Amino acid sequence: MRNLLIILAAALTITARAQTVELKQTQPEVFSTTNCIGCHGQSAMGGLGPPIAQTKLTREEFLTIVRQGKGMMPGSPVADLSDEKLDQIYTQVGDMPYVESQIPVAFKVASMLTTKSVMRIFLAVFAFAAVAALWGIRYWLRCAGLKELMPHIVKFGVLKSLWIVMKSFVVDGLLVKSLWQTNKFRWFMHGLMLYGMLGLLLADILLSISNPSRGDLDLTNPLKILPIVSGIALFTGVIYVMYRYKRDPYIDNGLTLGKDFLFVNLLLHTMISGFLTVTFNRMGLTGWIMTIYIYHLASITLLIGTAPFTRFQHAWVVPLMISLTRLTEAVTAGKVSLGFEREPSPGRHHKSERIVASVFAELGPEYSDDFNMRYYP
Amino acid sequence: MAKYAMLIDLTRCIGCDACTLACKQENGTPADVFFARVLNAEVGKFPNVKRVYIPVLCNHCDDAPCLKGCPNKAIFKRPDGIVLIDQDRCKGAGACVSACPYGNVYLNTEDTWYLNEDEAYERDHVKPRLTQNKARKCTYCAHRVDEGLDPACVVACPTTARIFGDLDDSESTISRYVVDQEQETGRKPFHLVPQAGTKPTGIYLGTMAAQQSSTLGNSAPIPADLTQEGGDK
Image (cartoon, rainbow over all chains, first blue to last red; front, side, top):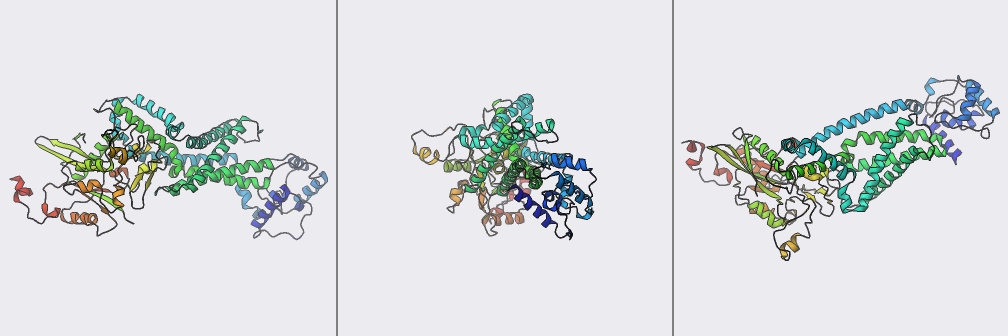
């Protein structure tokens, strides 16, 4: 099975560049019959692995790398590849012509994906998403009328307000109080995704600190257990959401369906490709790892890059809006500037003032900003 | 498909709150909950003071932030533009309350009712639809609109300050009123809090310094003392 897949991978690689490569009449006999061509190409000018034609490695270096493996390349034991055959391959490969134009695009792409360059891409995408998300938050704060609420907040106490907002972020955001009170099953499924996502984020940060080269870790290592458990939780949650989206006849709210599906789909693709990368790595399917890993990286990049515009933004918009509702309730109950204890629609007082101001701005200069509102009905 | 909208002519509004009460009666909202309300604003210094009445209700925004902010997809927009809160899906999270730029989404943790427990109107007609701790708001009386009727507040308005209709239909009363008013009185329709960018379907026409009865569907000549010149004398 394993060999079959590697041969399949090799076949795909060859087919992919069949137009540009003229196969030589005299094929090297041993090299072309080994698994090497899966990654290094039939003419040894590379595929997902580097070109090895005209190799500058010494025989000993060559032998060490083949036996022990290097990076993505697995080691080959003597049982699979005898010393004698290896010598033949070394000679053949050293004799094969080095043709710059034959280096396939796949290798050029793969060689650009060093840990550093991947990190740079991610930082750039994160920075873009963060700026776009902050820009988007301005819209939500404008809707909530934070500017108009500010004088009341100052009277109420800024520190006290911050405390209420923080508390709401934990209780309403992280612990999802409203779902806990109304639907425990939904709370659990939502928790799988929320905490799964947070677990993956935490694992990624910890791995970046303790294992920046992403070397292989034992499956029992906590840094391996955390992302796998989180990943399975998130994956389960996403599958459930997908199922619900398919089954729920009222999932289309008439405005955001496309953005909702984009988010869930990108998350699903990220999860599937992530698990496939790990699985292929464990199974030793070296020919496939790079392809699926690049797909995984692309999915994550898209997921994060589009986050401020898809349903992903609910992750920060909803807690922010709920915390502002709690804050407004508290400000009203504090009776610092209003004569009533609670409002059926928290924030109605300052929003009503803004409505009047906007109407007066339309009505003309004789309607000044200095108005007085009466609260009835 | 229709695109429903509500036009409110501030010149016609006399602040009687008939809309407020008609809405309460139609929708049976609990105490303190007003889907339709009228803001009272006083402006100026004595003796040059004015009072303006501004009827306010859910604007059924084209780009409704309450809908986009709802974590449970409980708020939805019908193809005809009416934005509704599905009471079965609402989990009472409260994000929509802050998201609404107009303060028109109501969320009570506990409802207070007007009538006694055993009285049929609230018990049978209202309470099965409105459970507490769920967000509610004006529905443009969707149940009436679907039957071809006008919303209750529109019917109740004694001065016809409210016109409800289809903006997509250029022959509808509301569409013609907008065009006529712009031609005859120069009043351009405007939206509340345009800086929020929510594309509301609620449209307003401003007050007029001197009321011209001819523009209000009445061709009777304007009494001299009601014109600007007459008033100055």
